[in-house]
Amino acid sequence: MRCALPSLALLVIVAAPSAHADTIDFTPAIEARHPVFADDLGSLKNGGPYIGASIEPENGGQLAPRFLAGYEMAAPNWLLYSFQAESNFSDLYALAPGVEAATPLLPIAPHGPAGFGVGAGLRIPLQFGKHSDQGVRFLVSMCFGGVVTVEHDIELMASSGFHYRLAAKLSL
Image 1: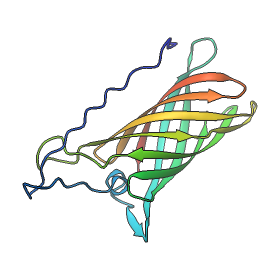
Image 2 (image 1 turned 180 degrees about the vertical axis):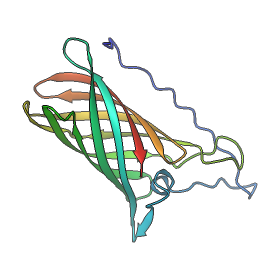
Image 3 (image 1 turned 90 degrees about the horizontal axis):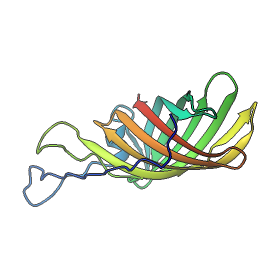
């Protein structure tokens, strides 16, 4: 399946008042995205590890899977730093450091369960293995409940050109 144009992301932000009628309670994004491993390391927030998978069209139109594992931290709370390793376990291996600006989790309903957060960022993928390449990856993401993140990437690589990718990540 090939995409002629990048898909459009519709971002709807819903905020509900907290128990105090005159304030809105915003939890720091990194702590909300990784509730188990969120530690305060001074001004650096420890986000914790994540795993995931992505698909992208290959030459010839077939969808190619890619598996990923990474780690996130934040400083300040809304600016996430990540280091991600990716592979298709046959001929592609990549490291992709990145930075992402993200909202905290916003409640879907007043006093309801953890909601969703949105983000936008940049990664620098460095591919090695059968085909070595480097480039830049622009991303938009949406995090649900602090555990699952869906990410849409547009990647421009020096040798192989333009790629689209859809990834899902699970925070551990």
